[in-house]
Length: 223
Ligand code: ADP
Image (cartoon, rainbow, N blue to C red):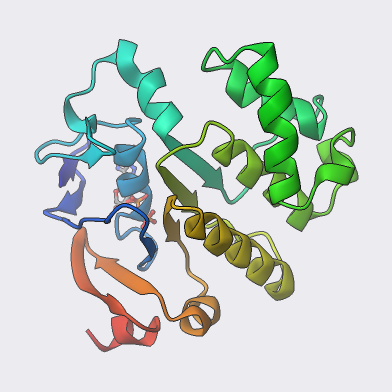
């Protein structure tokens, strides 16, 4: 993928990788290396200058705006700052993501309790985000990303606002979700977590993929 922003910044200079269905991978790299740009390309938020992006059989690089909702159903996103709606309960935050893609009330009533149970928040469905810990808020965001049963989940620094114990919890949860056949891509700076998990690590620097293999973040520093 190539991406040159309107001001001439070359954010991606031929960064290319494949994720197999059901795979789990970390995307690591220094600030400004192009990680967020990759996420924005995957969710159709920006268009590539050149190159092709396919997500679950969908050509994202050529997507028409009216088909964006279909793409959003296939890709769940989790952000560092959770991005929950404070005025809505946990249940309503998750239900909202289903309403946004036109799910029926019956589908919502069946699916929301299931995903809240999966992330261990079934007891908190009536709570508001401000009544939850950071780790719990991020678990709501994970439930929301999952609720439309996407083929791919991308997490942009999902543990950036959490302490080490809560960070490990979120990554353990993302691995559990991955075991249920969802492809997961986690962007992170958290070296110690990446090292602990011994997963595929795609490293990017200066808009290019500089290493791609299984193991710790340290592999990336050697390049
Ligand atoms: P990372 O997520 O790894 O920190 P980004 O993908 O955000 O990196 O940024 C890659 C490069 O593109 C940086 O040089 C950044 O300043 C630039 N960039 C990001 N977004 C924009 C934008 N909207 N307009 C111009 N330049 C941008």
